[in-house]
Each structure stands twice: as C-alpha cells, then as structure tokens.
Image (cartoon, rainbow, N blue to C red; front, side, top):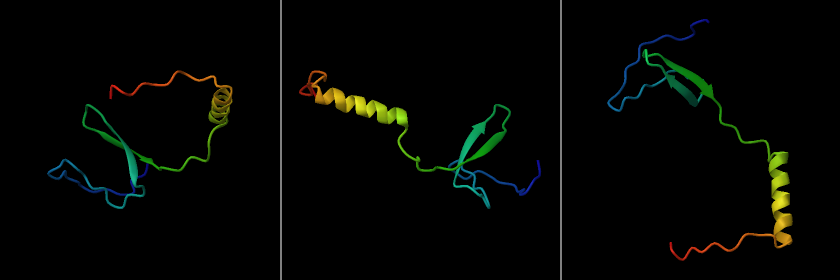
Length: 79
C-alpha cells in the first residue's frame, strides 16, 4: 500500500485523536491487543427501499388483521 499522509497524533484529555484531511465522516475502528488501530471508512446511506421480504410480511400482517386473526389485547395497567 502507498502512504498518502503521515503525521504524528496525540490524544487529548478525553482520549481522542483528530484525523487530518480525512476523506470520510465515519470510520469503523478496530483496536488490537498489540496497540494497532485500523480505521475503515464507512459511508452512511439511506436505504434504497423496503425489501420484498418485508413487504410480504406487512401484506400478511394486514391480511391477518382484516380477518381479525390477532392476538389478545395487551394489558398495560401495571405500567
């Protein structure tokens, strides 16, 4: 692998390290017992949609509700 950025970093009073010129906002951090830290970039994205399996389960649930095939009411009076 090619080194594209190299610098010395230190932890602040809250044990944090600042990454300079980071390309990503989120990282997955793995810390090993020998002291090595591995940062893997993570990009949080919105899901493209609801999966076909989830849609099928919702359709079955609505069908059961219309057939009045439901569980007994939950008693929340104790709370």
